[in-house]
Image 1 (spheres, rainbow, N blue to C red):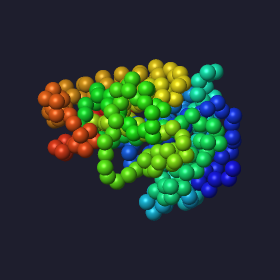
Image 2: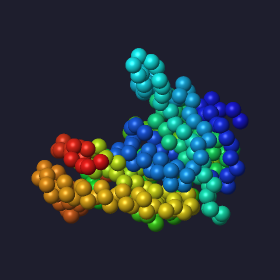
Image 3: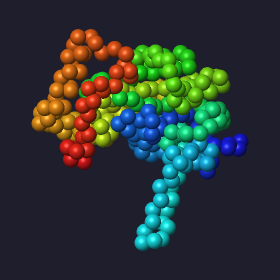
Length: 287
């Protein structure tokens, strides 16, 4: 099958693969969306099988190609885009197709329709998109909310205490993908991690760890997460030290703790960081 949006170099034989989509850009707070998808591709040693045609999905005046020029000579030019990865997992488990991409800025409906077409071509068991937002939560929280197209993922979502989303407002490409899944009878889910609004400039390995475990359960494959656990343990030690040395950050965190004790942590995803107190950890952490 020919696709206007995707260029596939290989069509591997896979058993009921689950598609996992992580986007860079909007909806990628603390790199949880793209970081989770990238970690899965690396940890599973997935093979690159194709890419997005950048002309089909991106406005170059908004997402400009990155050029490398050395002493007056053109070396490389890299447009926005994304890559597909595939992995055949252990016998009895679902195989996985992973897309790590810049969020499309053009042709969302065609992108979503062709993505579901591709999933059907592979005999997919379902599709999961990943997102993350800033919220009034703590860096130790593991809050994930979700929207699904039906009951297929319901048991796993309930087991992990994922919060069902209530939302009315402007849409992201994730919901267009879910609509395409629903219209084409493909199980779909969109998972959103809630990141602490007081932190910037890091990759939230702790929330990624929770997201990876949830995706592995939903997609029914096994995964060793020791490397990601070690990353989070090291980062958490640095954050705790920073808290003890930085009264401004400690004040923000104490305010959130008090609200949680008072039962005031509601309307997740709508509160943001109203005090405007943001700490960019890159200014403090040893990375």
